Image (cartoon, rainbow, N blue to C red):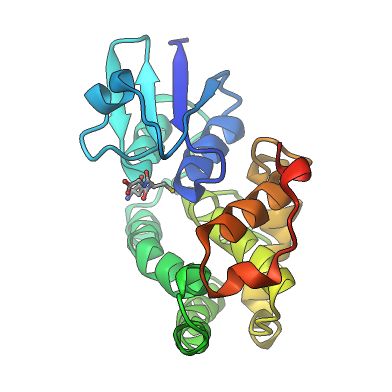
Length: 230
Ligand SMILES: N[C@@H](CCC(=O)N[C@@H](CS)C(=O)NCC(=O)O)C(=O)O
């Protein structure tokens, strides 16, 4: 088995997506957390967009972009998470293609500067939720996107559904309960051990602390929890 190093910012959801795929495949890997405001030279040399995640393989190959990393891991290491059927696989890829739009709409309120921006961002959430609710209705069975088998779609959406819950606990959003299939899917993903990232126990506190430090509209609703975020 090659040696895998996952370069990370601690609460990055795109890193979390790659980590979930590694965990679902029982692949040993080293997590290396770097600071967003102090990205080391060795990292800048291997990350074309200066972003995380980067998956470094055997200290010689550097893969970037969470979707490309997930697809690479799925093609090279069992168990296969993509469906075997080409049509089902194309549908799954269509939904992982939708992820950046979903992420922007569902977690956009975390970056809103003013109350008006925040209100607008929160109002955008149901559109993204509605699309997934319809997709899940077409897929029929739960608990996961394709039914009983866990997939790359599950790994992709889990970090963002988790952040919806984090944000809902900071200032009530109240949308998920209007989408029963999405809500059940979210419960299944949050109950899955692979979803939970480093450090497992303090992850939400760390997320809240980063949000507080960002100094945006929502920051005022997070009490200072620096100690919990260490
Ligand atoms: N499309 C990328 C997004 C990765 C991304 O946006 N990572 C953020 C951290 S969560 C980042 O590195 N931002 C640094 C920057 O934009 O300079 C992926 O899927 O890997």
